[in-house]
Length: 436
Image (cartoon, rainbow, N blue to C red; front, side):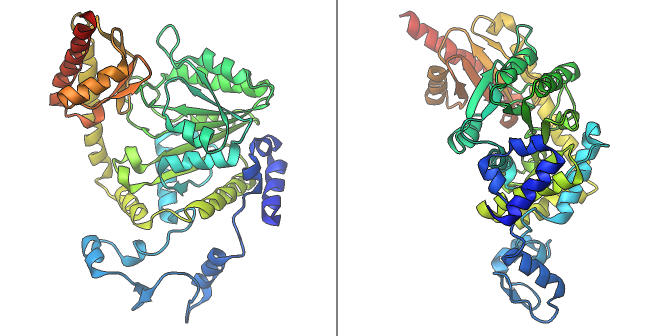
């Protein structure tokens, strides 16, 4: 094992042996090289005042070399904020700005020892880092039965972990904290579990209310007190899009400092929060640990970034930073939030017409995010999806035999009634075929 990796492991074990036990074999071997091209280039950037011949970029007239045809479209930005490599952990000013934003929007994080957010290539990359550091064959990832399908690829296929499922909703159509607890406690023989909490949920658009949030945290604490090391990952991809009386902040704050056997890891980003899907700017933040522990986890995270993408794209980091620093940012974001909330409320009003739709579907509770899910009563979801696509030019997502996900985020409010009327008509079409 590399001495740098060994040193990080010793620090982590000393600060919290339970977190050391959470590391995968890859996680234990990971480190960020302190003697290498990047570190030597960083030193040269500070001291090489005459000539700096260290890193693979090209300079011209004292600034990064660039093509006019590209710079003409980016003329509002200084070439040094566009063309140079961003540091592996991300643009420092952006990390600082995002941390300030997180603390403002998540009061429960205030007063907790919080790492500096590390820039990822959007949220999937952040989840992949968690998988690399903490997941491997024999480990279990606990997620609800209604989940983002990429978890299977990220944790299962890539890292060989097993996925354990619990029903998202209980009999009262609320978050199933008892199911979460039971599934976590079932891992006692392994002594470790990775739990992913995704609110607002993809695909259902559900977020727990404050009391449900407390029951989720209590379930994780119960697992920790039973001797299970829990990597508690909050996938906050749709953070901020809370339309009703749900939790208005991430559970990462409540999970920080919850128990020595619980590691709180927050995954979030500008992707959906700031409506910049193609920018691929996300963050991974460790919370509730000592300064030495946070520094060691950052080094291991940077090692994975260095070994995979080297660093994230600089231009999009600059664009996001510019937005966060703009005095118009909050007002413009509120404007888009109001549009999204209007769409969600319209969908709910339409679907509450049970006299019209009640015979063919129910809908799962939703109060946030981009999506909602219909629970079909009379036809197969995949059959309906294909029929809607072929006969009406309408795209939806089939999930299992009964569930049809509809992304109201990408439908104008004025068109939502037509959308659901057409989905209903598609069900009627299939019922008629079945009756023949």
